[in-house]
Length: 178
View (cartoon, rainbow, N blue to C red):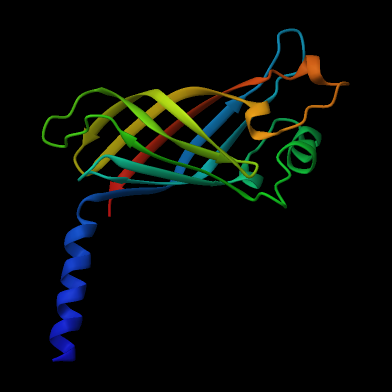
């Protein structure tokens, strides 16, 4: 009897897993540059993202220390002074693709969700995304802006005019069927 129950549990897990797409190599870029000053931009190539194609729910998780800058000192300041990545090691997004239907795929959608960074969570609505499917691969990309002050990120007066308050975040995910 226990074997039959175990087999049924495994079968139900594998059936539900057919509707999930996953990546562990997604990318997130952000830029907070101001004209005439040094570029303030970073990239993280180790983003985990998952999409449930039954209902359009999407989630992404990133380790904050994984962001790489052109300037090592800037990366150090970002982790120690702004993101406080020892205290807040992860950032995440949980949301839902509006009007998502796997049977009637469109090339663009919008996402509403919750973005968590630096211990704060804010609503992020109407993120425009590009969407495509190639065999068992789903590609999603988009861009949105977030305000550093919404996450209680303090920018010292000495550099306040060199770092944009509105941070442009872009992402690209190539999700494979799980």
